[in-house]
Length: 130
Image (cartoon, rainbow, N blue to C red):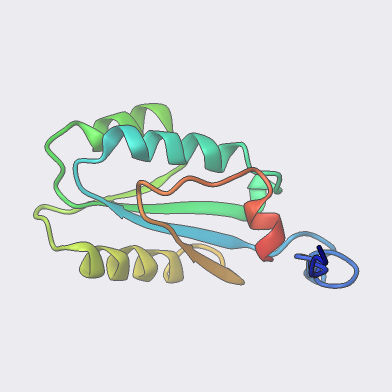
């Protein structure tokens, strides 16, 4: 049985580097509503990425969850830029709000990575994408 050759996931020479010879800055943006446990799994996985975490920021809109999501994120992941909505504005509006927050952040980002709050990522995922 013949198998197709897979093409490399990284561009030739590896991931594109910035002029400072560092990995590009990435803002992870997400929105959640009453998905505390899956979100905490995702945040732990983002912390275990094979990537320079100094180049990664996380922006999260909590859409007025009632399951203690915001308190858990504040306690366990103080580096996350948590935006607490007073009401559930829906997924699209929540993503828009987190993207706006990232774009207004203190530094520019080369990439925005939109993730559902129940997504799961492997350690090499981001490195392969950039």
